[in-house]
Image 1 (cartoon, one colour):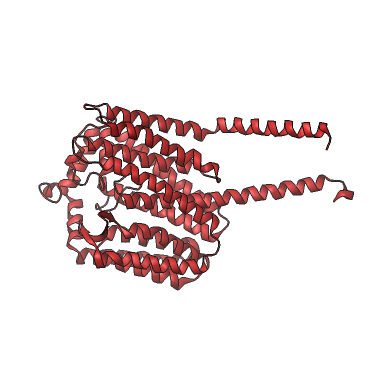
Image 2: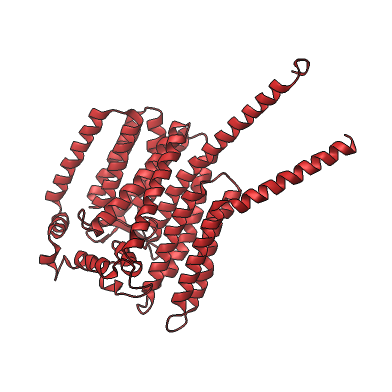
Length: 444
């Protein structure tokens, strides 16, 4: 190779690096993430300086923005990523840490610090799920292992579980409470996606039926509703069979009636939903305080760390959306809802863009699951439907729920990465064909 050609190659390489640097600087995701990091740094710093200075606030002011940067801009350097999806999920996770830490002051609790730790574990779970989707190709034997492990996890609360809010769906291991049904959500999507994509009815049907039966025995009707709607919508998406889907809807309505007649706490929740004010002194106190908190926040909120969120029972799980509206205002609450809508639309687009039926069904299932759970809990807080004991995705306090939701984002992001790999492969093939067509006939 001559000196001139080597010099030309070096100049071309420098131009390519300069072009890549310019594109990186123009990346809108960097500006969005920078704004998010500044918002949370300022918010945690503000809380830390209120009253008695607390070192935890300074630690979170550094740690939370750093986790946002790692999960949204640093990890995507190693694989193609949908940065908008990652940005929304990480904003919601950080919002949960912020609201929980703001309500810790004066309460003697440390839920904010614990949620920040769960957030870090959730980022790891998201990365693991991305790697699973990107690199595992042989699922036939592994799927049987997943089914057996998930079934064992589901029945654990029936044997060694503890009851909370009328449902026996928790187990305690080493002083830490875990909700196995949250972990099984990821396994359920893998099972549904694999067998539905291969048009094998009985394996996924038996597993889904078994899971619903166990959840009914645990009286965990909120999670059972999420499982059922997700399975039914994926069945319709994979088959297009409207009559059987309609039959499933009728069966679900019948199961709801049976659950209402069988379980006393379901009857109580429906009665509270119809008129919480006549039960204000007893069981209607929670929803009444929730509605008053949203109203007291007005359009712009009472201010970060202010208000009276601890008046609401279990404000840190079921009713955290009311705390957000009280502190930040109804306008901010609407923007949070808009983020969930964008996340759902983005997940749907990723599923529709997939060329592999397994990936498409799995990504659609994760999107549906997050959307259904969001509607159930926020609809309950706003008194659109009876309030059920499910968490607000990414935001509510709870390690199992947060890690599970980040795992679902990992499944969607893994599919998005594979989609981008497919597009890159198509581009390279197209470019090589164009170059071949430009060659003289003697060189072809």
